[in-house]
Structure formats: C-alpha cells, structure tokens
Length: 253
Image 1 (cartoon, rainbow, N blue to C red):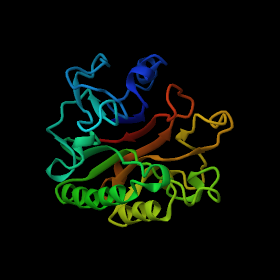
Image 2: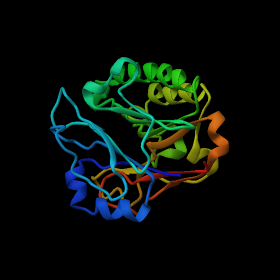
Image 3: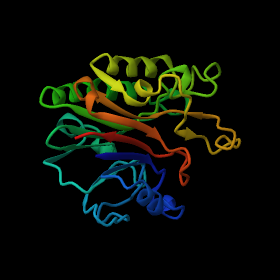
Image 4: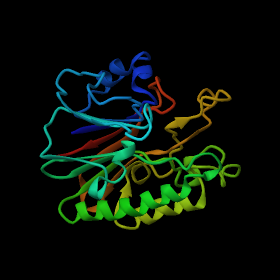
C-alpha cells in the first residue's frame, strides 16, 4: 500500500503546475493534500481515475485558508473530521480514515505565525492531538501524516543556528514533537534514514529551493506496533508545483 502526502499550497494553483500529472506518476493508493485553500465545499477540483473515494474539509472561519483532503482507491471503514469532538475542523485541519488494520490521520498543523502569535494555539493543538492519537492507538495502529510545521532536529533544517526563535523551530514546538514521539510514535523517515539530509519545504524567497536551503516539516509517523509494516519512507524532492514536495510511505499489508 502506497501513501502520499503533499502540502499543495493552493490546490488550484498547483493544478496549473502539474499536480495531477505528478500524482499520477507516484500512483498512490491514498493521497492526502494539505493547504488546499478552497472557499466552498460544494465540489472538489481534482478527480483521479480509480481514486473515487474523496473526503475534504475547508476552513469555516476564514475563506480560502487551510483545508485538507483525502483521495483513496480504497473505501475506508469510517471517516472522522477534526480531533476529538471535531476540534479544529473549523479551520479544516484534520481528517481520519479508518482502514481494517490501521487508522490514517492526516493533518495540517497550525503554524505559530509571525512573532509566534499563534504559538499558544499551536501548543494546545499538540496536547489535544496526543490524546486523540492515543485514543485511536488503543484500538488499532496509527499512521499520522501531514505538514507538521516543525523541523524536529537540527539535521532537519538548513540553518538551525539562526532559526531558534522562528516559527517551526522554537524549543516549544520541537519539544511538542518530542513529547508526541515519546508516546510510542516513530518518525519513519528519520528511523530509516538516520543521517540523510533531505528537506520537504523551501521558502519562495531568496532562491531557497535552488540553493536547497530548506526544512523537513512533512512527516509520516507510525505507532511502534506498526513499524514492522513500513517498507520505506521517501521525500520526493524532484517534484515541483508547490513550496513543499510530496512525501511517501510504503507499507506491507
């Protein structure tokens, strides 16, 4: 089973830069898209043959902001929007698909923003996320993916020394990721490639992608009881169309 996750930074813009062709080249069984930036939920602008099961959510509090979507070849047993009680679905951030052998949770984690104005909001999300994932994990294994808006370790960012007080690399955000992992979740890419320097996001400024001055902020985490099912975890830096590139998780099921 092949899973692909991609922050497209506006699905309509990315469609104009080869989104459909790129997805077809990867041929995922389940595709998770973040930051779709759709303003209404009447229809979804991407249709892929064989991936007829489509689930998406938009921000209800700010039009054209956030938004996530799943497209799947396999019909899930159940679909849930938001965290427990639907929390954070008002910003269109989380969808969970239940499959026979695992839960697949996709999220676009809140960015702490300029001057870290949303850091408290972000940290509250992190606390509630752990509780939500642990509740699922008590029933069956969990795969958690998406743009998590944090470079966890110094190897995950080009210039760690100059970014310690910037959103995505603060001690608070990195500690929140460490806390999540301490609950029995594994960063699949870093587990399989402990010394590999590969990024998944580059600023549009200062020719950052051309210079490979990036951050690894997109992840596939799995609960430890599912690690033996992981065959590979990849970052497709060759695929353009967004300021992020797609990431992939290959499973033996």
